[in-house]
Image 1 (cartoon, rainbow, N blue to C red):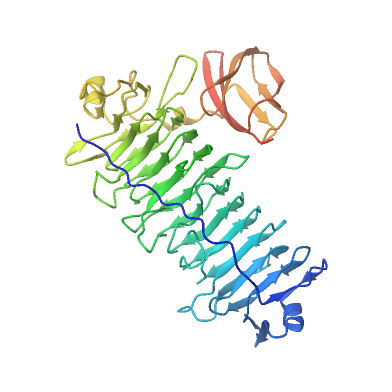
Image 2 (cartoon, rainbow, N blue to C red; image 1 turned 90 degrees about the vertical axis):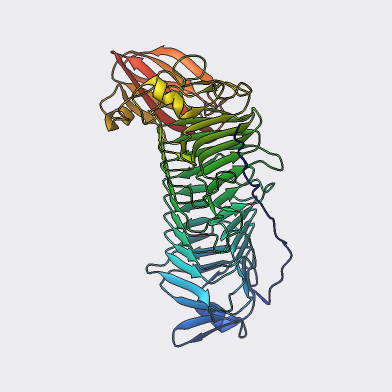
Length: 489
C-alpha cells in the first residue's frame, strides 16, 4: 500500500515583552501625526512632508491616532509601533508605512487590547509583522508586503484575536500571510483577499496557518491563494495542541501551492464548498504533500465537502488516520449533495482522485470523477478493493459529463425566495414560493429541523443553535434546492 506522509506545520507564539520610547499620555485625545511631531520631543519628526518615526511609539489606552489623508511615514530600524488605544487609519488616499531603509526593516506593529482600530487603504511594507494580541482589528483594502519574521511568524499574526481581513493584497512576506498560534484561540474572517507568493523563507508553513478558534467560526471566503515556494502550502487549520475549530472555506481559488487545504487534528468541523483547487503540486514529492484536500486526525475531524473543482494536484483528496470528511451523501441523517469535480489528480503516472488511507467507510456520492461510468471511477479511487485494510468509499451514484453551472445554482429560479437576516442571530426567516419540506443541517451534518412549511414567510427560532454555517434543503413542486446561512450569536 502506498503511504502518504504530511509534514507537521509549525505554529509559533513569539514573546510578548516589549517596551516603547514615547507614549501618548492616555488622556482620551485624538492625535494626528502632526500632533506627534509637535509633542513627542523628536520621537516623530517631519521633513518635506514625510513623517519619520525615530523611536518606539505607543498609542496609549484611551487615545486615538487618526490618519485621514494619504501621508508617507518612514520608520527607523527595529522600531515598534504599539497600539493600546485606537489606530484609525482610513485615509482618503493611500497612506504608506515603510522602513526608512528597506534593507533595515522596522520591527512592525503591535495591537494589544486595542479597541476599534482600523487599517484601511494603506500600504505597509518592510516591517517585521503586524501582531494582534487580545483585540479585533479591521484590516481592509490595503497592501501588506515584504515583511520578514523578526517580530512575528505571520505577516498578520494573531493571539486571542479575531480580525476582519478583507480586500487586501498580501504578498512576498517571509512567513505566512495570516497565522495564529496553536493555542492562541483566534477566529479571523478572511474575505476576498489576493494572497500570493508568501513564505519567501521557504519554511514548512502554509500561506494561511490557523490554530484553535475563538467563540466565532473561522471563515476563509472568496480569496485567491497562489504559491511560488515549494514548501509553502495553501490553507491549514490545525488543532495540534488541542482546542476545536469550526470553519467555512468557500469560494476560494487555491493554486500552485505545496498542497491546497489541510484540516489537521481532531475536533474540526469544516464546510468546504465552491472552491477551485488546482495544480497544488509545486513540491513534486507525493510522499510529503500535493493534496488538493487533506484530512488527518481522529473521527472528530469532519467536513462537508461539496461543489468544489479539484484538478491537477498530486492527490485529489487524501484522508488519513480516522478523519471522517463527507464528500456526498444523498440519504440518511446527513445530507450532502456532493457535486464535486475531482479529476486529473495523480502522481507516478497513476491517477488518485480520492485516497482513503483510513480503516473507515467514507461517503462520496454524486461527484464527477472525469469519467462516464462507475467502473472507470473505481480506477481513480483508492480504497478497500485496492487494499483490504482500508475502508470502503461509497461513490455511487456518480455524475457524468461534469457539473453544469445550472446544477450549482441553488438560489435562482427556485422555491426559496429569501433567507434573512444575514447573519442570523436568535431567529431566521425563510420565504418560500410554495409549500415544501424543509430540512436544516449544521456544518457537521446534524439535522436541526425537519418540517413541512407553507408558502410565504416562516420564522424559526435559532437562539439555542450554535454559531456557524447551516444548510437548508427544500423539496417541493418536483424541485430540490439548497441555501446556506450563518448564525452569529
